[in-house]
Image (tube, rainbow, N blue to C red; front, side, top):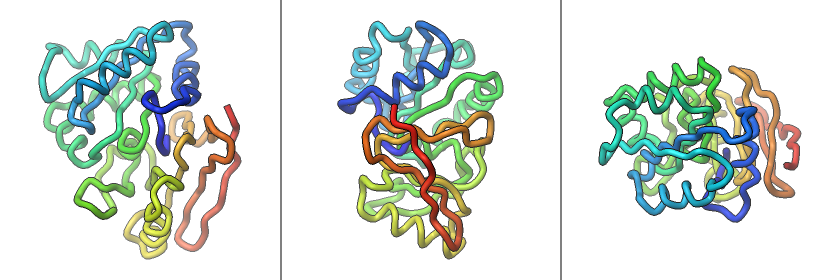
Length: 218
C-alpha cells in the first residue's frame, strides 16, 4: 500500500486485504513496530476491524506474547503499520520476526501494510527513516525483488527522488504507488493494482523510464 490504512476515512484497501484471505471472518494480526507500538494505533486497529475480523497485535517494545511464532503463523493475514522502516527491520531481525514473516509468506498468509508496511517486503525502498530528508534503504526483507516507493503523490519529494535514485543506480528498478493504492502480488508476481479512491495511480519504474500501470477501483 502506498499509503492509507485503517486510520484513514476509507477501509477499501483493508476490506480487500481481508477478502484475499478467502475467509468470512479472518484472523489478522497487527505489527505496529514501525510506529513504536503506539497504544492509540493498536486500539484504533481493533476498533476499525471490529465485526470484520478476529484481531490481535504483536508488540515488541512491551512484550505481551510468549510465542510469536504461534501467534503469527496462526493468522490468515498480517498487517504491518507505517513508521520508521529501518528501525522496524532492525527490531524484527533482533527477535527473529523476519524469519517468521518469511515462513508466513511461504504458507500463504496474506502480508500487507502501508508505507513502512509496504517498503519492508522489497529488497530496497525510499524511506524517511534516517532523518528529515528521504534516502534509499537497501536491506529490506527481499521477499519481492527490486525497490518500492510509497506516498508517490502524497509527499512532494517522493517521486523526483525515487526517479533519480533508480536512474542513477542507487536503487534497483521497482514499483511506486500513490496514497490509497496497493500492489497485489501472488507469490513474487504482480497480480494487479487496486485503489480505494478515484485517480489513484501505480507505476513501474526502470532506469530510463516510468510507466503507469492499470489500476482497478475497489
